[in-house]
Picture 1: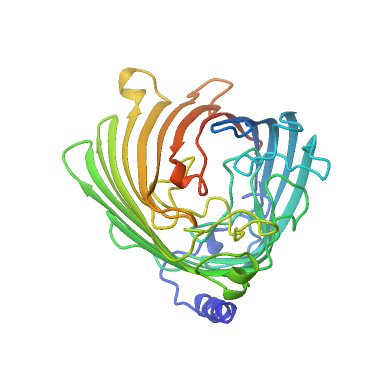
Picture 2: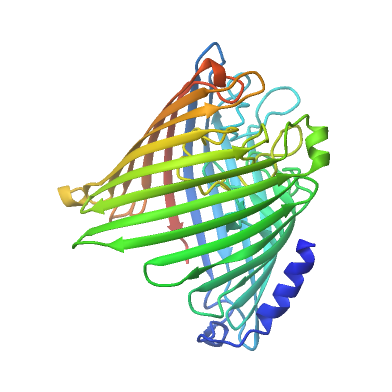
Length: 428
């Protein structure tokens, strides 16, 4: 049903009365508007698990090249997008690789991680006015289908996506994807996704208020709806209060529940965050709550083959309390206190620091109720401001996660360290 709705909405989008200046009318051409960028990424992740679990770590060097052409001139513009990815394993062989939460290089049947991997993808795109239809390999960033670029290489998907911005402040999206490329493996269909339909949009009502509504249908797995409302209250000079609400409702397919020995099929999860910013400081207070009868809690991302996951992207969790733990267990309630500091005011432009403390309780598993978990998150990030290494960033992130015995079926205690060095290069 959702794919039929997508087709009808696509026709409606293409027949919309144009309320804005046309991007296509201002096209300079296929070559003139093209760009080629390369991201060099060196990434290291280490998880020091507690309670007798084996520690895991991976280290790799990646090159992520992305090409985006302009559109040909005329009523219907045509263009091409393409990417090429390569990663070389520097550490994390047999025994240290294989953690689902790290997943730089997928292990083979021998238990050894791949020494390197490479992937290529391309898509053709068409533009009429301010509406773009793209078919092929893509990296969608939507609240119900969001590719994961938080590891060494990003995920990608193969399918069709329509993005329309015909009305000022309004963005509409409709798409269908039939293959997923896992971030740690080669191949266009290495993620195990059968199909996913996505539909929704966002609207900037005023300069301060924005809202969005999306839905997705992962065939034979689940249906998902998402809602967001974000309001910024300007206060005194250099001061503001931002309220951000995010919520998901998921319904698992009955066949999937039976085949994977899942208990229950329904989950609702939401978060409300309030952030007060004053000068270089920001203070965040957030609450997040999961309800429903599914023992998976809020299910997202992962790879369907051999996992109780749904294949809709590793970043498809627009919730306040998602760090190492996502605080998304069955019945879980969590609270966050966060603080951020921009060192520009203190003479060090490009340096930022963030810290957060999150505590969750009321966790339900198949064997217990009332479990708890808590996490302390820290991150320093520095972006070079000028010189030959301009825009190079160094990110040092750590988390300390402690999980009660009652929650051990859901999560595991440990200390995590991430070191990412990103160097973006604009070729043209």
